[in-house]
Image (cartoon, rainbow, N blue to C red; front, side, top):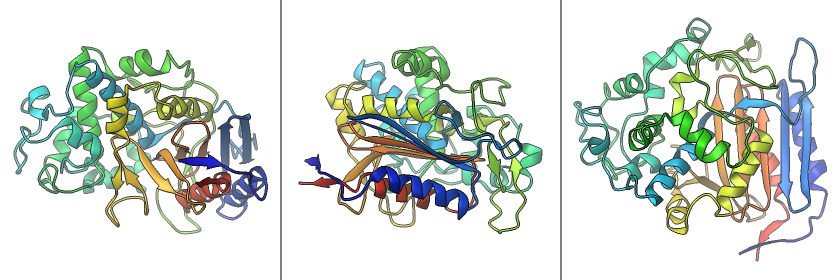
Length: 369
């Protein structure tokens, strides 16, 4: 059991120092962190939302949340499992007959649980060489509005052999979450975006949280501009404004938009046990360490939920995400009473290292007893 004890120095000052260093040292355009705990909310910012105007970053800003989308997708799937509209033991072939086939795949052996837990062995389409060259390099500027259907993403994945037999390994795969998104649509007869709105965003009053649709390339509400070096890690790499892009290549694996406040609210409800019944909550939080070199060092992964332990010994739970021009992290205590949502509007240097420094500062006083 974790019980907060008084901190030796102000975590607020320490968090602000990290944000300031992210801008002055790493050269990131801007960074925000919003803390939510029993005392209320506290917002900190450094740098700018727009390098052209010098406008500062604001609490209400929307940003692209990348793979934090996976936690929403897993929550929807687990809600449907609780309602017996699907089972975690259902197979891909049951729900999506003929979609995953050839090249050594056995869709009758891949379950929803495998997909959610990154143990399906289905190749991650996001690391396909052709897709990588279009989305993570100079060619991105020509391909930023390319549109994909979920089925096309799965087809790209299955041109590659499986990474391993279902349940026999672990590898981070966006393809698994695209398949879960399709299964959610099949099980409900509604689009993934509609289910997200009906089951999570509207009940929790997450006004800035949604999945862009159609030809929606911008962000709907107040937002920072998003900047990228197109993953060219040299100090003199040119910086491009990539705020407008088509996120269909990420969809239910990484295409959502949200805000720091919305994410803290969502994770508070999820960690606090108010979005899932106990059985599904237990499934989500049954995390196992990610194999070395496969994901974030020291992290464990459940079903759309991850955890890591900070230097104080406290374990924090949540998820991070990255997409062109935007990195974010939202983590908190297991009871959902103490959370911090972070975002940077640039995709170079080491945002994960910076986010970890904030977690170290903010949770320094949350020691296990």
